[in-house]
Image (cartoon, helix red, strand yellow):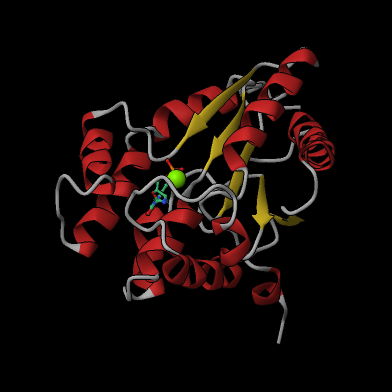
Length: 223
Ligand code: NYM
Ligand code: MG
C-alpha cells in the first residue's frame, strides 16, 4: 500500500437540510452529542456561519437591516462556505466528522426561489467538499409554518418556502436520504443515528472525499 495515510480514517461530512422549522438544528445537536459519546471526533457546524465578517453581512441581510442584490447575496452565502473550505477539508482529513446545519443545497434552493437560474446558482458551489450524506428533513411548508411560527427573518413565509421545497426536491442526488420530519423527535434521532454511523464507517473504511456537485446516478448511465 502507498505510504500516504492522510485519508485513512477520515471523518464524514454529514449535512442536514430542510425548510426553516423542519427540526434541523435540534437534530444536529443531538447527533453531534451522540457521535461524541461513541468516542468519535466530531464538530457541529452551520451555514451561514454568522461569526465571520461575511457572515455578519449575511446576518444583517437576513434580518432586513441591509438590502443586497439577489445575485450578490447568493455569492456571499457561497463565499461564506468557501472561506471555510480549507478548514473543513483539514478537519475531515484529520479524522473529524462534521455535522453541518445547511450547506450548498440551501444556498441554491433559497436563491433559486427568488427567480435566479438554478444552474447559475449551483456554479459557485462547484469544488467545495461534497457531503458524504445529506439528511433531508422532509416537511411541507404548511406543516413547518404551524410549528410555533417563524422567527421573522427574510424567507420565513409559507409561499416562499413552498418554492424552496420544490427546489430542494429537484436537487436530490445519490448522497441524499429523505426523512419524514413529521415523525417524533426521538424516532427521527434514531433514524439519523443509524444513517450517520453507517457513513462514518464508510469514510473510516476508505470512502474518498469528493467535491461538489456529486455526479447523479442517472447521468452515469451509458444511455
Ligand atoms: N440560506 C442559508 C440561504 O439563503 N443560502 C444559504 O446558502 C444558506 C446556508 O438563510 N432561511 C438561508 C436559509 C435560512 C437562512 O439560516 C438562515 P438558519 O439555518 O435559519 O440560520
Ligand atoms: Mg432559520
